[in-house]
Image (cartoon, rainbow, N blue to C red; front, side, top):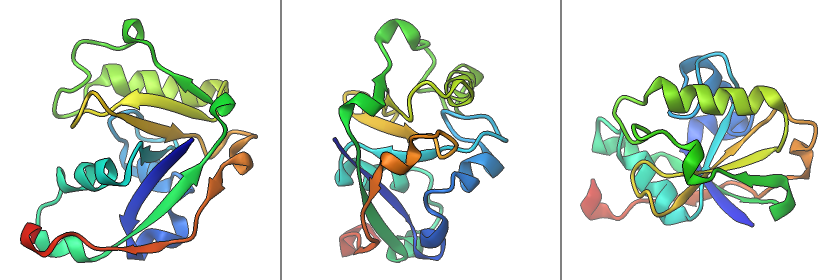
Length: 151
């Protein structure tokens, strides 16, 4: 399976330590829980990054990484496990608690969740604390540029 991670260039060296999510929390984790967010396609990763941006000038400062892993390392949430408010903004405690509980359980190293931006598409949560995290193949950082008309 392949996923994509898009980060600002200045964070490329720490893009897979889960520190940003641990320090600030996210849709699928409480503050204090390390987690790495990736998307099912590069286009979805780009769209997910556009949503929280405050200034278009920030679009020029990104790199992308491919993330490859065996399907056996991944668990997919079933609809019954998802709360009705999963797309709410700001992110609800229901999704933060679900992801944090999953990360602490160390069951699978990857969890597939629906995107809040495009719910028909999937995002992937990677647990950097999991003993099998080293089985995930992380590609080299590649320059990523948004189309000029988006700026």
